[in-house]
Amino acid sequence: MTSPTAAVIRTESRLFARERLSLFWIVLFPSLLLGVLGLIPSFREESADFGGRSLIDLYVPVTVLLSMIMASIMTMPATLTGYRENGILRRLGTTPAKPAAILLGQVLVHAAAVAASSVIVILLGRVAFGTPLPGSIAGYAVAYVLALVVSLGIGAAITAASPNAKTGQVVGMVVFFPCMFTAGVYFPVEVFGGTVRDVISLTPFGAASNALNDATGGSFPGLVDLAVMGGWAVVLYLIAVRIFRWE
Image (cartoon, rainbow, N blue to C red):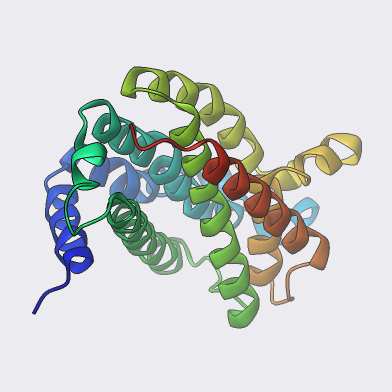
């Protein structure tokens, strides 16, 4: 017999599979961006400033984070705030399938989409441009999971703070661009130095970028970067739990 939670998760998976625009931005856009950047000759040239790596090498972890940003900030909050605004969460509270099942379903489907995007990006970089695979598998796994957890925490906080879908879109856009900057989408974090780099490293995606780059280079991510991501995740989920409303 199928449990109500499993039924909700299955339904959310089907609905998400029909959202072609969301799938494009989460799964395909990061790899397309990497492919376009890889066609620029200067991006494939190794540089001593980057420890013998090229810009396209640095952009593989960046596009992995880009997928997380798209899922957690642009897609998931809009869906959940829309459910709340339309009374879906409130109506679920009167059925065996509790509203929390939708939250779990949304987290799972978005995490699965991000994971698929990450595999495509890493393989594309390796096959098309010879970018290195993660040198520290364990370090990369730890950094990746923490980055995904903290990114979904940002999405949960946006959802909790937004009473309706329109507000969620506005808040999401306000958060979106700083996250893109600190993740290194505009300029890889490695090009910065001094105080700017230190400040960026204190943000969730700045720390995530550092950690993924360290693991790609073969070393275990720095404990400071892991602690920054973990600390942000705790704060974000506490905020989300405290202010979240089902209706």
